[in-house]
Amino acid sequence: MSGEKLLEVSNLKQHFKTGRHSVVKAVDGVSFDIYQGETFGLVGESGCGKSTTGRSIIRLYNATDGDVKFKGVDVHGTKSHAQLKMFNRKMQMIFQDPYASLNPRMTVLDIIAEGLDIHGLTSSSQERKARVQELLETVGLNKEHANRYPHEFSGGQRQRIGIARALAVDPEFIIADEPISALDVSIQAQVVNLLKDLQKKHGYTYLFIAHDLSMVKYISDRIGVMYFGKIVELADSDELYKNPLHPYTKSLLSAIPLPDPDYERSRTRVPYDPSQLDSSEEPEFREVQPKHWVLCTTKEFEAYKQEIKQ
Image 1: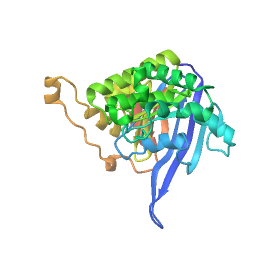
Image 2: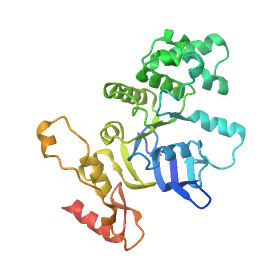
Image 3: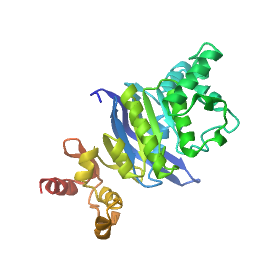
């Protein structure tokens, strides 16, 4: 991981109208940076806004407000067709559902080659086929699989096809939107290890979105914890596990099971009660200690600093 910022997200908001006077604030003022070569984990329960954040970053949704900069260039500003094509090539997404994200009427060859065709990255059908076969082998599949259809593959194999499709255009930044949630546990580890190996070989930068904190810790350098459209805590992966500060983070961590019967018998689940938070002022994102940020009021900020000292 280098010290160079690849992505800067500032006060990102994504609001949806659900009626004449009703608005859902799916993402409500999210800010974070992602550095070249790192994996930034975004974790939280279903409905917290983490997937919407990823889709807003890559412009599948037009943001309600805020800024997203990729290598210093505004992603959501008015762009020419050529600029948008370049963004789409450098930023790719791996989707959550390996069944719904692949067109059942297309062969694997055409699915993976779609990006190659759009961006004109191959000059002949032979080169196109060779590139797809190379990508299939890169993600652990056989080149003979190119002529098959998605229904002929298992969930884990389909997700590998989705990864190959994302890699086809040689991206720099990949948003992995819960890429393992629809897979069996044994297959989850294979897919995550594949992503880590690809990052080591090619230097990819990931935004890894998930609700499983234990898996996010395994793959991520830093982790942001989301709750109801806001990031409530952000820290290095090890730091977040050793010293969780926000009550919601503590609640999430207390729910992680371990393969230890003695520990499980004594494990106490910590419930999260938002009404126990200080309501005397609007909370702000504050750096409690270097690189460890928490959404808190002034009173909570002082309490968290004392907690770290102890």
